[in-house]
Every structure is written in C-alpha cells, then in structure tokens.
Image (cartoon, rainbow, N blue to C red):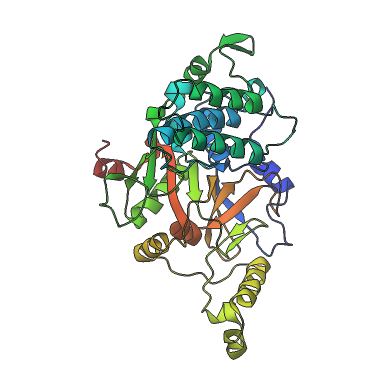
Length: 392
C-alpha cells in the first residue's frame, strides 16, 4: 500500500526549519498524518479535517494508511441537511459548511468509502468547485419550502438526490477494495470506525461547565452537543491527547490578523513595545489597516509578543462574533520556536502551500483564544476530566 503518512524526515525535507520565515521550530511530539489534500474552491474543510483525523486514527490503531473519501461525507450530509431544512421551513443554515459532527456522528449510519471509490468529481473538473452545485441545491430546497402547491410533494427528496448524483456521482452500494467486497457501512466496520468512539469539547462560560450543549454556530445545523470545559482543562486535553499518540480535529477562527498564510498563527499583543516599535506616537497615528499591515510584517519576521488569554476574553470574542467558526484543521503535534514558546502542529487542507507546504504552526495562545470546538477519541481524555464529565 502506498505510504501516505508524513514522517519527521519528510517534514524536514519540505522546510520545517526554514530560515526564510523567521521561525525555527523544533518538534517536541509528532503523530502520523496522511498526505496534504486540497479542498479546492469548496467550503468543505470540516470534511477534509474530519477525514484527516479518522485517517490518523486508522494509523494509530494499526489498520494502516487509507485515503478516505471526503466527498462521500459531503454528499451524505447535503441530503441530511436538506431534509432538516425542509422540516423546519427553511429556518436553517443551508450552505457548504458543516461541523465535525457531520463526519463522526454519521459513521454508524452511512459508513465511509475509500477515495478511489468515490471522488465526488462528476462534473468535468479535476478539483473541487462547489459554487454551482451549492447554488443549485440551495435554490431547490428554498423552492420546496415555499410550498407553492400548499402541500410538499413526496418526491422532492428524489429530485434533490438527482442533483447530488449528477454532481457527485451515484453512491456505490457495493464496491471492491483490495480484493474484498464491501458496503460503505461494512467498510467502516472493518476499520473499527464507530461514532461512539468520539467526543466533541468546547470552552465557553455562557453554559455550565462539565455539561454538554449545542454550540451556537450556523454550521452546527445538526445541533450536535459539545461538552463544556473551563479553558485550562480544555487546553490540558490538547497536550494529553497529542502526547499520548492521538490527533485532534480542530475548529477555529482564521480571520484573525495573526493567522498568516505562510504557515503561522499567533495572537500579537498590539500594545507591546516590542511589537509597536520605538516610534509609538507615529504608530498611534496610523490607520487600522496600516497597523495591521505592520503587525503582519512583524509576525512574518519571527516570533512576537502575544496577548495573555483568559476565559473572559474567549467569551467576549465569541459573544461579539469576533470569533467565528470558519475553518477546520487537524492538530497532530507539538513544537517549540527558537524562544521556547509552544506551538501546535497543524495539517491544513489548502494543498501544499505556504512555508511549510500545507502545514501550520499555531501558538498555544492562538489555540487557547480562537478554538471553537474540537473532536477527539474519548480515550484521549485525561481520566480526571472524563470523570468530571460523567464519562468514567
């Protein structure tokens, strides 16, 4: 079987210690990941990162290296989302986005497919481009909910699935893989992928800690539950998971000034003298765009002074929607920069781009501030935290 996971040797060869970026990272702990994928012009990061997480789970459990189909999950979730959209009279976010629940909570119902059995590219493209199909699907379900006949027909879902078949391809009921015959469900079962193995966690204080709630974000259209932890315990989970061989499906906000496209994510302290420079009076006279440009340049030059993050800061940013759930990635390791500051090693789904060829380094501060929720294997929970959640 073709080797898909990236090793430390490969990471070194693609410039993990690149001097040009101003950062020098040293790996503390690194877990196997599969090759960098590209979601193209599609809002399907949730599927790519969720599948990347499952692929690492398969390596961890000794099943081997697999390339699973992201588009099979996307197609199944479009159908589920349409059903709920119609049932609630259109009062639901119907778009390309989704959550990790759309990947892990559907495993028992729909299973998984290898990518070779379902690429989802049935519309004359070699990369994923979902603008047209989203427009067609959203227009269709909107038309259904307008209920022009005063009674919704029993065949609307058949028509909807016809669009999905046209763009993504029909779903194989049976397929051959490495000399064996499977259904999507039996394939998932053969790999040991079960919904009950996974748990979603978050950290916000507008709900009680140590209890689950439905995170109020548009892409959580399933109203899936996340267990709520205080921020310090939440951060303990990242380290415990990674240090014990697990990876993390990570939902975060990448609209921040500190998320740099060359592969670094930090939370710069815009008031710190070392970030502002000596001419503070001139700095204060700059426009916000000019300040942002200078801060980005400073970040690209190397490590910067970061803010100190509190639970209250997280909450304010979520309440005023400065923090939004706009991207999903996979955390698979821990590294330190030349100053000894901790970063999490991140696999993205934008192709082999940036200084680290599709990999990112997110500072501990960034992860603490901008994470909306994570999904992990339940076994990756520290025992003390699992007991507080009533899971042990």
